[in-house]
Amino acid sequence: MCFGADPLSSLVRRSLSTYGVVVARPFARGRDPPRKLVRRDGGHWCTDSLDVLVHAGQPVCLGETTVRRYAPAALGSPSPGGSTAAAVVDVYRSDSREVRYSTDPGAAHCGSLALELDPASDSVVELRVSFGGEELRLCAVDTISGRSTRTAVPFACQ
Image (tube, rainbow, N blue to C red):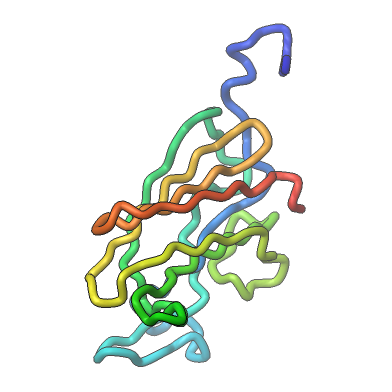
């Protein structure tokens, strides 16, 4: 595939949209709306927050990888045998550079992946996001067990 006469000019592109994953983060009074407040495990958490991977208009290099680490806040339902649960990573996009929550106007779900975890361990999920020519490539790895899962989110999901 040829992107242009000068191959180096095609290595950096600007993202047309903001992409992020949904996380629960500490609630910030005065900044986060009260309807986003959840009290769990003695803490105050903000639901539906987006951890932005790339902002609209931000330059990204093809093949560049961003790595984030997350402690699962709540695990999905255990499997029928009860030995595993799932950490789900939901990806959202928005044309707005300043999107903060998955419920903001114009924010749209565009992909997800589920990673099986051992509910008895204190797993940390490492999320690796690579910027391809036509998609975001996501790989989630359980840092305890080494289990992993992958998905791709096309930029054309708009």
